[in-house]
Amino acid sequence: MLRIHNQMSSFQELSEQVLFCDFDGPIVDVSERYYRTYKLGLSALQASYREDHGTDLPLQLLSKNQFWSMKRNRVADVEIALRSGVPSDLVESLLGQVQRIVNHPHLLQWDGLQLGADAAIRQLKARGIRLVIVTLRHPRQVQAFLQAHDLSQCIDEIFGASDINAAHLNRAEQKVALLERAITAQQSQGYQTSPTCMIGDTEADIIAGQQAGITTVAVTSGIRSQDYLTRYQPTEIVSNLLQAVQSHCMQQVVQAA
Ligand SMILES: [Mg+2]
Image (cartoon, rainbow, N blue to C red; front, side, top):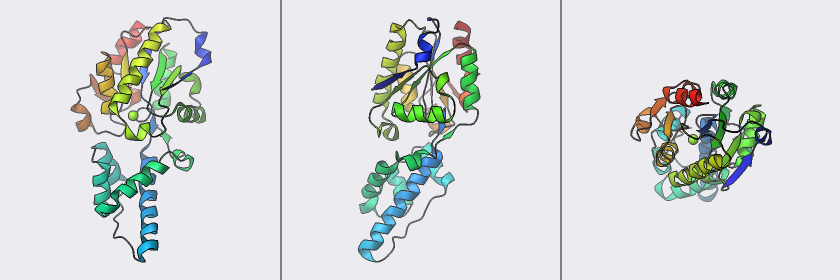
């Protein structure tokens, strides 16, 4: 686990109310990067097959909507590959290629800010909330994105994963451990973590929040559909970070601040 502390915030008054927020989904739209990675993986597979066999694979490229809707409903990557016409014996090779290139800087540049996320973050700061990001991304990637969008001064602390592949794999147990450490670290610095909540777009965020015993707000702007998120019974489900900030759960955090 890696942790980046924003020096600016060390001088602020303690006993601030803390809010925990995931990065991909509530703040970042990764759909274009993931789709381009999928397309690049397929073309690389096609090129090597052509070189080896002198003929083309009968691939069927999914549209971005089809692809993203499958990801949001948690259709397995193996299934997505099969539905794209990849022969079953070549699926592993495609998935390996996708894993290798998804964090390449040329693809990372396709990550975008979610609509209204900057306004939401600025609203939280204006209300004196301490904003802590808990993400399976590497903190360096998070910092680079925040700087590019002029938001780094709004984020007080980042708890990220040291493994560059962690975000793509999105393992719930990793998120649980990370949130636990983030909460403990805030408490030991004297910040208020009750009431607080965890905002995120996947089951990993909901499970992490639930295991930490805090309120969970799921957003549907990320890589999981509303139907899928409902099964995990978060405290609230809203469409994006801006709505999360205005949600009932958040009002309790804000009022305590
Ligand atoms: Mg996420």
